[in-house]
Image (cartoon, rainbow, N blue to C red; front, top):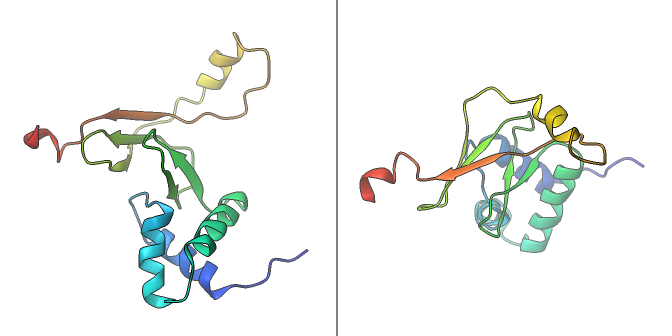
Length: 128
């Protein structure tokens, strides 16, 4: 079954593609409602979930209780700032062999991994 075209979903996707940060559904909603004032938060959530299921976005959970979304679906790591809540892409090589290392002590099949570092970002260090 083909997916029906949606201007709202396309607007959400375009917004996400323009971002280097990792907004929450609420942040996406606040932006999208400027263009589509009648859009509901539920519609934004459903479209973010659908875009994630289609592999066009990835959902990131960093321990703050919120889902963050990233248009960069390549394997990469993130940093979560415990002070300001920023989610930042890490500029480092991925440790692909970590799946093999973990498989040696796990009874199952490891297909992927997520890694998030946490601490204090460079902008927050002078404040602390």
